[in-house]
Image (tube, rainbow, N blue to C red):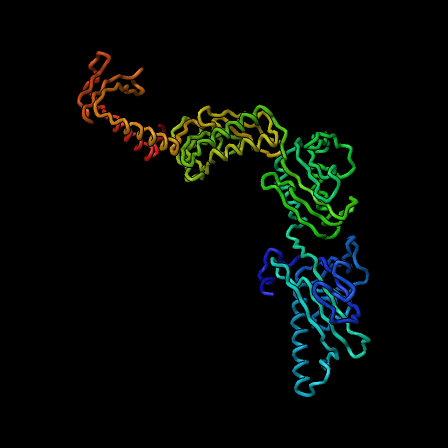
Length: 521
């Protein structure tokens, strides 16, 4: 009972597949678990679906989904003790626990009363005039702790033989998925993807002919047309197969909602976390199939999009992921149809999250530096492009950096699916700190291994005022700069305040600029 009380995911709404019966038992000594009576096992008892909300039974159906006529639901909402098993009725989980506690208490009180008066008196009380002959219970459900089987054998004075009450729970149905949640998946996730042309793999799960269970690729066009259905392994054209029935994703949502509207059954439903489509479905007693259950899997949903752009995006993302960059900085200019019309910011990313933005000195007509901007990681910009490919945004353009793969230019027009979404993004500068740190460390280690202490090298100093830069020769002896010499024959910059470094010193300057997150390296 404590375990059941701790279960939160079931909440107040659940169903029970129940097998129950009350019958005379003429040979009590042979009654053992799981044998329920002398002649009947649980598998032979009739099944009912008991639907419970807030610990009250609100509906009871047979396995065909038909309500049991004339059932007194008000009676099942009243407080009860163990004598309720005298009646033809069903019970909630908590009521079963109450019955077990009550019958155990009654048996103890009966024995105590008998021992204090007459040891040979029958084990019965004046209030119930019934003797408890046997109590058995199983708690085989390790997840929920429910009493999976309850068997009580009793005899009242007017009974010709002992009566066996049997209550077996085949399965608890925690109805965590509601019609509202199915609608939310359809409207807030799947519909937002805007996919009207797509393929998916459908697989029916049953102990059936292999031709039925063989996975098949379903091609959907314009959301309503099933263009083709081909089996995965043999390529057989299965579009004319009458069973199993394949549907569009939208029609599958309708199937699920209809199944719940007809009355909750034994069902389990899961959804794709990205696209929102149903991925695994198990529904008992769906009326448009001949089997007694509907059990199928939908996987590998593939939008049919602009093939060239999708290929470029996929390849660019793979290139980006090879670097594993978790710390970088980029300058972005964003223009859109909304206010503010233009944004220019540095975006700082660390640990795969945006950790801050700051102003960037880029020429923009509307003083964007005063605008609030949360920024996106490069991965989120990839997702932004993928989303607009999925919803088939008009005139989507994306260009990708040849070195690192990140999108440096993205442009969208307004979409019919997402109004006012048109915008353009331009990444002007990109500084991959984490990649540079590794690269510089490896090169510095290689230089150190050479153990070169005396050498000369040529360095060209450049700035905006110097076309082509000024070359200098630097001579290093025993790890220290011995001399510097301007090489173009002009001594104009010989005494200029220019700092020179050994190779080791240059590595230190680069590492310092990375640590201080210079705007460009």
